[in-house]
Image (cartoon, helix red, strand yellow):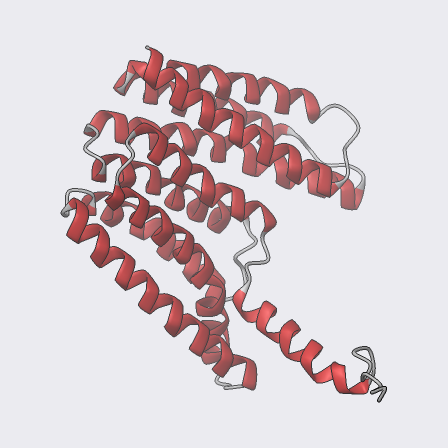
Length: 276
């Protein structure tokens, strides 16, 4: 007997598609660049000082990146004195992810002690600034983007400390990644502005490249083994200053290029620390 299958593209499929779209809206970060900026410190920290406790902290950093989206949505709706169906969904997603985050932190404590905790305390105000802007739907501005990216970069330092690495190496690793953020975030914002409006003043991004090199130089002053990471930051600064004066590339190409450059920086920094 032949049984006709029901179409998955008909009206019956629409509620499922709507539910999936709503779930993605409250659970998945919208900033595509944030995925790379979160993974870079995790990978760098584990390459410099691999450990089970560090791995737990790395996963915790990734969960912290994910939980920001539903938490900000709940904060926005509470501030506006409303509780919509999406608010309840976001609250449930945030609760599950926060429980997972707590569990991962406890595992890191169990496996690596609490030597990494001061790094989290130092980075917490930066993350708080980003959340504060997010509660007012302003997380796409320069200050929260910079604070959030530099704050999550602290995961590299925490992982290094959890793996038994020295304070100088941990601080230097954080500074190398912070230097990338200082140079890349303003650069990307200017390029997006050029794509949308056709023209944008590159002065702020040029200054950012100089600041990026200065921050990376401090990293080398703390830990000379990170000199290769400093060299890559310098190359990135020069390239980005040049690209600001060339025709812009599509946003997707810009994002992929940034992910590739971040990967090069992570690998070069780790290799340099192992060789020098």
